[in-house]
Image (cartoon, rainbow, N blue to C red):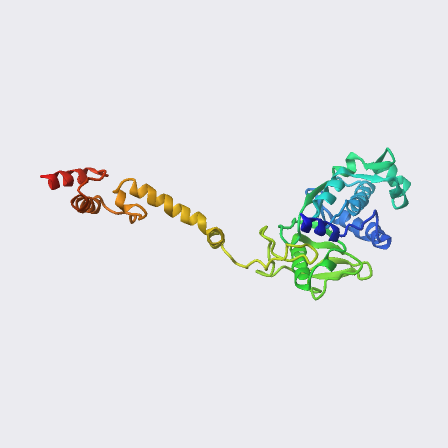
Length: 329
């Protein structure tokens, strides 16, 4: 319990509507109009906000897209996926209720269109809320979304080690459609992956996906905690093995389970022994019969035990009964 409370304290949920106004101005004036203009109406426009916190950035992006789709008079469905490792923050984002102080960051026009005012608070309206799906997810341990037109991952990579940063960026590159857009935080860059992302604006940390993913370079998470978030106690795990088959994975899990609980395997042997000796003599308790042992071998063992003990055993098959009659005669 104490480690969970510590982890909760270490998670940083600093966010606000339209935070870093210059970045959002660039999105509203150049990036989003271009995405909407180039988008075909036969598929949804898909956005992923990784590290969504309590939802302010997610709703900010959704508002910009909804405004541009309406202004361009395009019949495009908007799908926004928002994820965070903090389940409590995700719950607040789903609720979509914010204090009156958001009026300092959200224009009166947007407040009127996308929010309803309640008791000293604002709640997002159905049009805005219905465009977003919130979920608890760890980008290092859970599979990513795919076929995305834009990914926003702002101020999350700075809390990861360099190798984990590159892993996440390669996942983003794979998840984005060709020429998709990546938005990072003001202190983040794509590092040495400049052959996968070209800058739209270096100053505002906006990049365009280029190139193609190479076979085997993307380490897809399988839900086992493949990376290590530096500020999350107890979640530092070794990288997942690449190229492992489902059969090998199953065998490793079974071996790990038996090694961590040896009493379970011992119990299985004891139960097997009890089932075997219930068919044999009392003197054979604690030993198990070899698999596939024939009735002939059992009958021979029965005759020797009858002579040595002076009492008969239970007869497991017809051949044993005939052998027993011959012994008596």
